[in-house]
Amino acid sequence: MNLVYTGKTKDVYRLDNGNVKLIFKDDVTGEDGVFDPGANTVGLTVEGAGKSGLKMTTYFFKKLQEKEIPTHYIESDLEKVSMTVKDAQMFGNGLEVICRYRAVGSFYRRYGAYCKEGQSLDGFVEVTIKDDERGDPPISKEALVALKILNEEEYDQLEKLTKQISKIIKTELEQKQLYLYDIKLEFGRDQTGHIMLIDEISGGNMRVYDAEENYIAPLELEKLLFN
Image 1: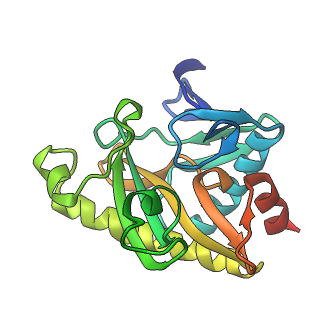
Image 2: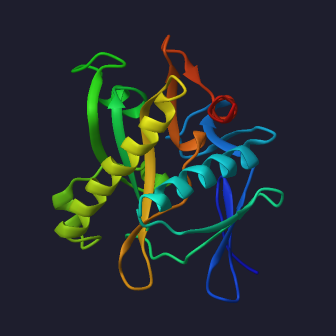
């Protein structure tokens, strides 16, 4: 394996056959020791976070495969805390596509003058540029097209896939009386140019609450989901 990239929560290796191996870490994003899925820095290290994230990711990717939604997933090894995936071409330097069901996190911090915290947003989709230095700024469809990061058809497909994937995850969580407030997804192109879901689907990239509106931490979420 050849190390390609050392990320905040995963290390990325290229395999001899052209596929990619992701090694999940116990580091999670946040600030001042508090977890935040939208943060640009590693906020804390939580023992078992890597395996927990991989377990949830594997579960949801398999669910999406059953529904014939394109993903980069090939296989996982929980003991080695690794996942083998297809190689993907990023959109520019990477985009984050967020589906928001409730006004929390960065959305509420930005637009709190116009909404109440926790207010329903009905699956609103927002795209941000992956750029730690500039705070991952939101970007519109028109700007993405103008900058040639993607075209109009690709944006529409990203939005459609995001809503479809998020609804599947939301429905799955609701079976355990857990409620998805927002989720951050990433997409890339495969070797033929087709769009597929990449990265992970875990407690580290979503906010989930219980029926009493108590926030569920990532490790606790995994336990509740599989118990």
